[in-house]
Image 1 (cartoon, rainbow, N blue to C red):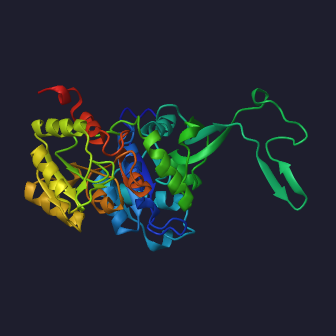
Image 2: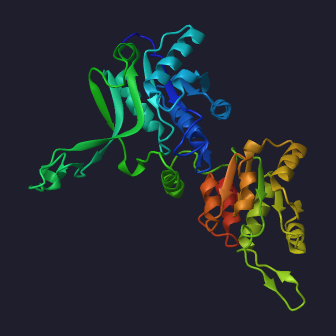
Image 3: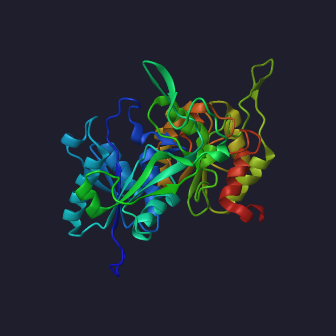
Length: 398
């Protein structure tokens, strides 16, 4: 494309509200972030993408999309059912966008939020294939060397090989698996063809280890298990001081190892980590607001808070309500709060804050809902690790 001006590149993310395989799929959190939000962020970080639109029929998805920085196109019921094609959603979104902005789209992208580990490099790659390299259409694909089989009434037969011959990997032509993550098309060609593949199609190679589509509950479980590994090196995977104004800490299982010692008089004692105390002191010096929030009624919680010179709310049944009230009183945006926890009673708080963090040995449900996970266990330096994320070298200054 050589118009002399930057082409208008519109990324469209289809995100229906209805999903039979995984109810509420497009809002399901992976690494503590809803799938639709992960897709919007990847598109917004791609250099060539000028605008991002989420096509949806669901108010909650629309709210999440706007919160992530996307425009929203409300999809009519006629193209929001199970049989509706992604192409229909993209064409409708493109028409709506052009009418509202009185502008012509040069390149349109179809980006699927059901690919949880989408990267901005992938989005940028398909856009560049069309904008800069002259392709008519492009898609993300991962190299594969698998032998594909098919069955019929006579039995099994090889699709990409002869079952009587097993050629070595190096002797076979390279094949690619369509990942379903991102596609790019010349807008005029897409309108004419009515589908995503036309003209000269280019493959944009992606990492096979990141290929996963959420089609059933087991896929979502795998994505949540993989998120701490695959998200670890992504930009912004760990919070910094610029991201956080307040730190709220659960107590049992987060500042302790979740064990309790009971003496013959029924008195309970717990063990804490001195490094956590040093981390909390550093966070206080850095000017962050800190709170211990716990359902535990044991006086040891208040005693620990006094030792650390930080406020505490304990014996709290509805931690989420207490957290909202505290944020209002402190004038803190919940999206700039880091909440560290370890169990299912922390999940309502995870849903409120911008940085839900699980300790390494947290319950699976907490790890699944967390945006990131510490490498240290609760009661073994997890809080100090969080302080190191936020403060870096400042942690060691007195």
